[in-house]
Structure formats: structure tokens, C-alpha cells
Length: 398
Image (tube, rainbow, N blue to C red):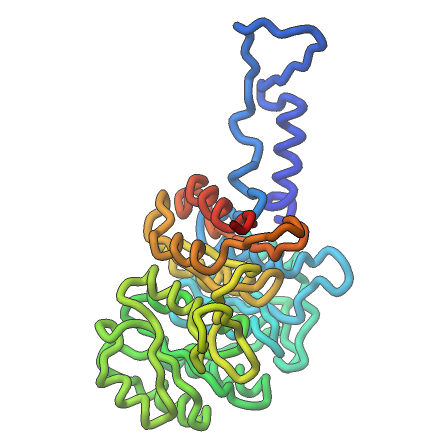
């Protein structure tokens, strides 16, 4: 698996130089006539897999993306690089998969693999073998946390989180998280079960912060969500999405269980951008703005961070990519609604906050960004990746 995703780059470059697949590159000492042509390899891996500021997880589906991300975060090739435990999340319950992202936060630190209810997908099985989790003390020694309707696993020490519907399952994940941490989270994200695109950005923050995700509908707070909020002992509640999605009546109901703030915007792409920039308490100035102890939110309004770009039509990619928000360059999940276009809201966000500038000291004294692109070209084109790369590049300050 690691070779197919990361070794591919070196192999493709070597193939290009060696002339694999009938392609030849000829170097001559003498002058080459102007009419001569040199065959160029059709695919050498760059920029499809990486540019100077971006890396692509090149999966054709979220199951493959989750496997690749898990091995990127836990290469499992040397001592200390294996995860203690792995979460196996369901593909037939997107709410549970997104809610399970919180298990990547400390103290559980479980990357996510995906499966349907039947047979474990081959790539998931191979990746689990490669990860070889040793077992987690905060999960009763389990090597795998099975969430919802996923296959049983022979030969692995597992623990299961059950729920009869997405609301009870998200609440059960919340209880598991609280038991592992030894205390409820002071902050809880409330997302919509009616439109997954607005809930997707919550996965990254949950993985980074340990803030659990619970679900409501546009007009009701389900009983399981109410009970979870009661057990969280009056948390700070953050409603993710506009009033057109989660109505004022829902906010009124939620106020019985803790303080309530709303963050978001009128469309899924702008909603994710607003979530990336949000902080409570609010930043006094637009810049600089940073997360500080006791605050909620990414508060990313300055350069020098990681960013993750996901197609909003591939809901489960939010869960698959969530471990990247909790490691490496860290950073929020942003969305595109068109494989071939970087949305204006994302472009403006990068231009306003992300593009690093350097002074007379030179670029080596600057801060740097890194972007993850999730999915193959059917999800996000190379052109969009190239534009993202350009926007994240350090530039001279004028």
C-alpha cells in the first residue's frame, strides 16, 4: 500500500528516465535538429501527486483515501510509527463516520479506516495489517474500535460502539470519547443530519481538538442528542451552518443544555471557510488571530498552516482525511463544489489570510503553508491543485 501511494512517485520518475512503456528520452551530445522530437512520458506522477506546496491523496473513493491517510499519518515502518488503535467506521452512516473523527484526537489517537457492513474491503484489510496497532489502554486494550455497522474481525482485539440510528451512534461515540478522556469536552459541535456538506468541516476540528460532534435536524433536537448534551454538563455548543439549515427553534432548544453560538455561512463552501476562520471568544482584530488556550475554533487568519481540500460530493472523504487535521501541518478541511474550479470563497480566504510574505531577510525566514488534496482527478483536478499550490506559495512583501 505504501509503495502504491508514495513509492509510485519515485517509481514513475525512474520509469520516465528509463523509458518504460515504450517511451524513450534520448540525450545526445551533438546538436539536435530543430525538427527532432522527444517523446515525453504521459504520466510521471508530478504534479498529479505532489507540487511544491501540495500533496495529493490519490484515491478513487473515500475507502482508498482513508487507507492512504492512515499510512501517511502512521507510516508503520519504524518503531514508534504505529498507531495504538484504529477506528473502523461505516460507509453506510456518514454521520457516524464524521462523528468518529473525534477518536483521532488525544488520548485515543485512532486513524480512520472505512468499511461497509459486509466484507472488509481488501485495501482496508491490507492497511490494517500494515498499521498493526498494538492496542490502546484508554480503549481497554483494543486494537480496533468498531463503529456502527462494520464487519467483525477475527484475530484482532476489538471494542464496538453501537447505536440504532445516526443520532444515538454519534451520542455513543461522544460517551466513548468522554470515558477515554476522563472528562467531557467543554465544547461540542452541533451539525445538520439533513445536508452532509455543512457537517463535513466538523470532522477535521474534532480530530484536532477532541470536540465531539452531535447531530440535529432542521427543526428538532433528537432525544439522543439531548441526553448527550446533558451528560456533557452544560458545554459550550457551536451550531455549524445557517438558519436555513438549522432553524432558530433548534437553537432555542439547545440553549437548555449550554451556551449556544452559531458559526457558518449560507452555502457549504463558504460555511467551511467561515469555520476555518472562526474563534470564540472573537478575535479583537482581523489579523493576527490565533487559537489560544480556552478558545474554540481554528482561528486561522494568518499564513504558515496546513489546509485540506475536499470535494463536497464525497462526504466520507471528510472522515477519511480528518487525521491530517490532527498531525503534520494540521489545519482545517475546506471544500470545493466543482472538481475543475477552486471556489471564489476559498481563493479569497487564501489571498486574505494564507499567502505568506517575506521581507528583505529572504524567503528562508518566512513561514510556509502545506495543502493536502483529497481524491483523484475526478474529485479535484490537477488545475485546481496547481492553483492551490500557487496561492500557498510565499511571495515578497511589497
